[in-house]
Image (cartoon, rainbow, N blue to C red; front, side, top):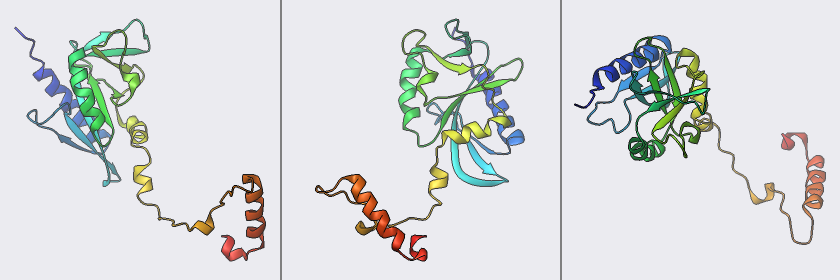
Length: 200
């Protein structure tokens, strides 16, 4: 008879829900198993109760049956999900527009750890292709917010910046007859003679 991991996974999702909403002060939206497609829930990023517009997609695993001690990498442990599972889900995770993480919850202690599912460092390309690697020092909790925000890149910052439009005359153009150094000298000589208002 196949081992039914649904009860322990439900407990893991409940624990992640508690960490995200009660401790991180962010939003949590669980995904129905009918539609999960390798994602169990979404963390909605909030600062002082206001949505930032960034979401983090989360796969949750919980329980001893997933835990795998890897002797080749003593600073990591593995979450044993199977090679076929990784092959079928990794392409989906990579297509998602935004960070995708795996959170592993220890069933007994309720401690949890996380890893970036879009990072090649989370996988074993040669041996142990059936596991996802998690650094043992990468605990999941309110202290993880900064690390998660680094995964999103600079998208949130970039979309708030003003658009600067440049004309061709604003650029240092390197002609065939002049070296780049000579073109730059001429540009800055001309720029230094301009009124201070125009130089700022």
